[in-house]
Length: 153
Length: 37
Image (cartoon, rainbow over all chains, first blue to last red; front, top):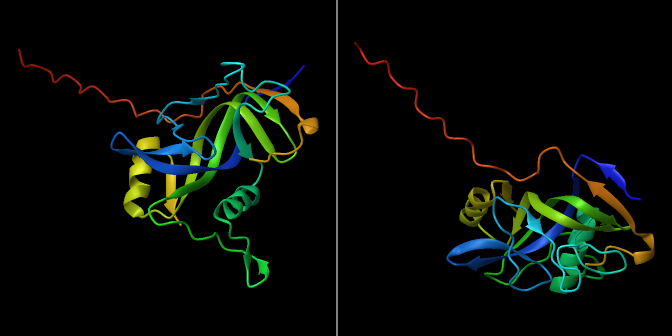
């Protein structure tokens, strides 16, 4: 039997920021062309379990980390920049021009499966975004679209 | 995304009183002005 709470969990994750139909959208970091809808929840879908994601013993669901550090570490692995003069890279790594990424907090609710470093969730919506590799104009567009705080970094 | 080993999983049910999705502010209808008789 699962525990029941009324407060959403807030995790950390990454998104690509790409244009869809003339507007920028948040897009799944690991699944190409899966964009997050604006002003409505993003729902997990699974090719095996359908809307019953996240299923036990499977890897489906909407992913988020417990901490910002874990999300930043994924970004460093993605860009391949982990070391700087032989020391761990403390700053966020540079990105390819024109390929902005959003790092941010995300609300998770519905059925949530918690693991040691993060979560798989049924429903999610961005809570707060930090834009990496984007300018003030893009931050404003995402703020208007998703109605959440967006800070250019 | 490596969120940890599957053996560490535990399931939680979260039923928020309100979904954490921003909704547009309601548009207030303009109050009708009294029409002089």
